[in-house]
Amino acid sequence: MQEFEELKNAILHCTKCELAKTRQHVIFGEGNMKAHVLIIGEAPGRDEDIQGRPFVGLSGQLLDKILAACGFSRNQQLFINNIVKCRPPGNRTPSPAEASVCMPWLLKQIDLIDPKILILLGATALKYMAGSDYKITRDHGKWINVQNRPAIPVYHPAALLRNPSLKRDAWEDCKRIIDKYCEIVDPEHYSPHYKPRRNTQL
Ligand code: SF4
Image (cartoon, rainbow, N blue to C red; front, side):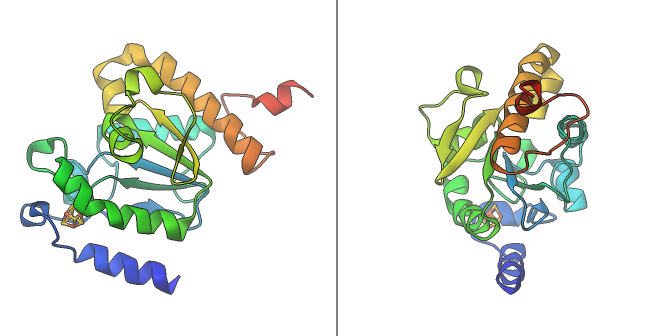
């Protein structure tokens, strides 16, 4: 707990890259510091930078709906985070240098939270957590190993807003997350929209 607070304080005062010059807030992340599921997105956008919280714009609202359909909420099963903690100007993709400088903060958070499952939201999170060989269009919904734990790439909610036809695939990926959560965290987990596989065999 104390280590977590010390880390938070250090991150909130970080000026290690150029993004510090244009941000309004550092977005530390949000959720249960003992969460079993860590969600990693790309970067704060305009709304997040203003409010100082992750995923509060349109993408965040869609993300919350998807998570609720899975039976997850921010302050219970989840901690939500990004590859970089300060907004890139104009919502551009973070540069490799920015991602690399910020990465130790995220790795330290993973170390302290020790989640059992990582959800990689979109191409940028996939690239920086798993490597450039992976492609979100090809590899979404597949379990891979990242930081010695199961990780699943899924479409970023911003991509679902741009292209609603991806929602069907996105929900199939969510079902895999629910099944994995039931398998390794809580066999009794309840989703209002999906009966996990362990129940269908009863
Ligand atoms: S993006 Fe990361 S490394 Fe750059 S200033 Fe913000 S917290 Fe520090």
